Image (cartoon, rainbow, N blue to C red; front, side, top):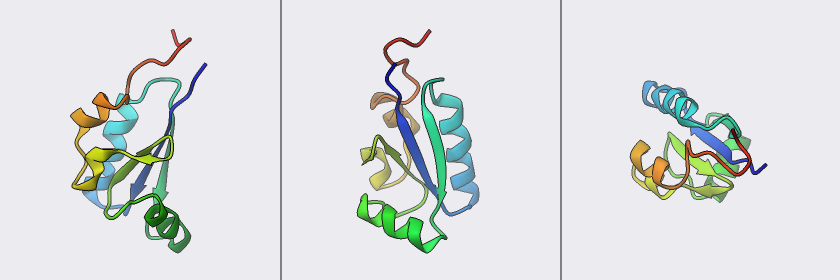
Length: 90
């Protein structure tokens, strides 16, 4: 079974918390969702290397979701696969 890896880069702000909750609710059961704290210097460095310029941002399978270049757009995240069943999932 394929598995999406979803990483949410957060700064612990109320908007970040809303995105973490929303992505968690939208994610399919085979998605691996993690939250990384941008206040940690090593996380921030890794995030910058992936193109993250603001919090919150969502990276799916190592690629910054294009909806997150100017703010998180949940509808756009759905378009790029968030919440969709992957092969073999019931």
